[in-house]
Length: 168
Image (cartoon, rainbow, N blue to C red):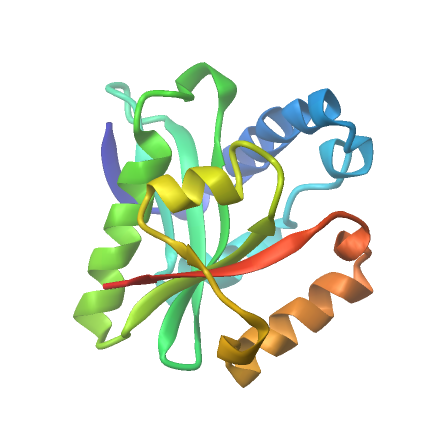
């Protein structure tokens, strides 16, 4: 796999990756998440234009996974990581996270942060294996609090969620 910046022509396939990756949420009783719409092309383009959208490309150059991030306080916040099920369990997600950590370091950010479902095996437990730690409420920065408020407004608090951090 090769990690590279997302191009404009990658954006529609990223929506397909998101749909495919989301289907596994049916298996853990979260059909609303499984059926949620992927990010719009305009949203994806915002990350792509900011230089904080990366794809994992296969040997043919097609994208099989992606990561979106944006600065939040003194960190680079991982907004989304999605891996197509056909490419899962091969270290692709970890490679994207490591790439984002390098980008964070290069930009002077202190850490990667993210929010995720606490009890979904490929969410918080996975990120812990990738070097993230769960943050206590008192450790949340104003920006992370704002992220959590937006998520709550979208109904994501129906399931337990956590904020996590990985120093870079």
